[in-house]
Image 1: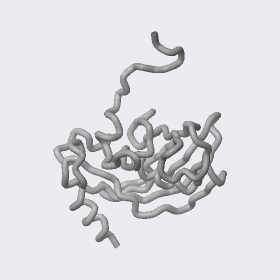
Image 2: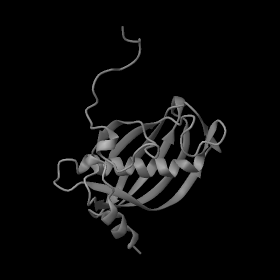
Image 3: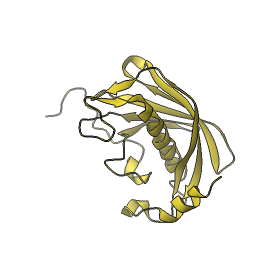
Length: 170
């Protein structure tokens, strides 16, 4: 018997592990909740024993990593049918606003990133993290670079060459 209120229907998007190079415990996002051209929303639920947990909370600064992983997922969805898998590399964040000091464990939040501009390789995203009831918890503007992943991420390979290439960005 299924629990009431639990949506067991398949998601229209691939699992995050098929789209981005992060693996547990560093895969912090739960799932893609919404995607449309220029926008992605991903759920994230900090859990006990997870990275960055301090006591029973996660510092709000970790929202920058939530935004970066959501941008990487955006690139993953956009490039999912190309022969070469792409990943997003965080170049920087600005206009970071933290409305709270930390996030409670087991509280699901939504990381929303909207593409503001792109030249095909570098993109800027406006980001928001919203909690229960839609309260804004954090916001920032991030710059990311889309780079081809040299290893098969679907096989759990490490994108070593892509990371080295990204490290050369001034």
